[in-house]
Image (cartoon, rainbow, N blue to C red):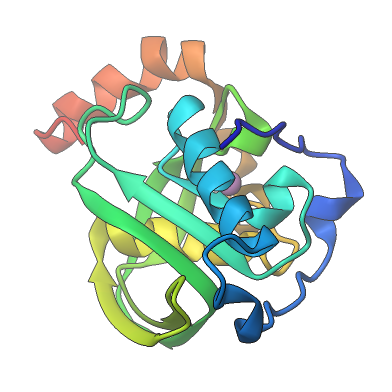
Length: 188
Ligand code: NI
């Protein structure tokens, strides 16, 4: 178990298409890929992320971990159970779009307003190699879209439609977060 270094925007690995994971490599619990998954979980927790994609730790593989329990960076965020997604594909996007503020461990200290589908269906394999289909909505759906984008060389900036809605975290907290709460009547 180890906490890994996180690739920052500008590193070419974040712009590459990630390669599918060979499911045969999941069979041994001591295999390199299982160790990598555990290290990614450690790294995500250490960095207070709600998701981490393998290219962010310098592995160009279609592998994502996500979890949201009590998170200091997203204190109001709904819970997401620990999920390991191998070779994930979004098979359905809901028609409804939502705008939400996103951050990324590879663009630390930035927040941007990003349009996403409110609902998605995702097919993937779990760390035992079993096929899984999940339907997610709201924050969970946004995290899935954000992380799966990383496997296609995309970051949230690429999805923004208005770059004036990009802020440093400190300024976001000072000028935007409170105003959002008053405007929308919620703390999300
Ligand atoms: Ni990210």
